[in-house]
Length: 334
Image (cartoon, rainbow, N blue to C red; front, top):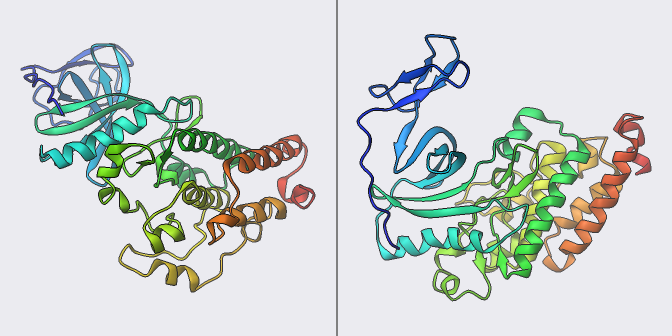
């Protein structure tokens, strides 16, 4: 991987207050420190130079990377930068790092977060992506539950479409979960983080098979991935089912397990409670369909076409009644 040319940091850093347009010299202030505009009193955050970009705020931390809301000064647009903070510059790391950018960039779909560029700067690898201003579905669950059922179904339909497009292109995501589904300014859901993805017809994915054989989270990983170390698109269906369950009920279907636990044993220690028993607004038919997505046998789970068809029916039924009655009184008829 060719390293980007190192651009020296400017001696001075000046920013404009977004409220009153007052110009402020923040050269000697700590990066990401919150300050108050002396003119209008609006709270501001001190940015940090990174190559030709201004890192404005941390918006996500996970694994070996941090994601920042940033400003691309060249194009004058808001972006997200994912920085791998411990890039060792080895050929092996470069292959793994480039894998995520290459796989995501190869998938052109409205519900997949686009990758604009990638490179290295000051010994750190980075990816440039679309900035998703409304955060993740994990944050939506934490802050806004119970979530509107029609909205949940719309989000899952978007991600089903993205996963289906990826599968048709020979890509298995391997890490579907609320934290990896982001919302743009229009509240549209998009799939991100292809770091564990596997391209079925890609030679470089074959070379990285041992590194890509891990799983992202014990709460969402499929049974076959745990047993055999491999999953096809039905593994992503399972993880999508766990995500849908959590969005509807604000809780995960299985008991919490750690990565070094026998996850299958932990899951088997208690039965999964059907979603409609946790939230009366969820119809029994929708509840049973979610449970089908969580079947232990991959062959018993629905495919993407069936998921799309069924969830559209459920969404239309809920949408028809949501402005007239409270969900809990109509769920039995849906």
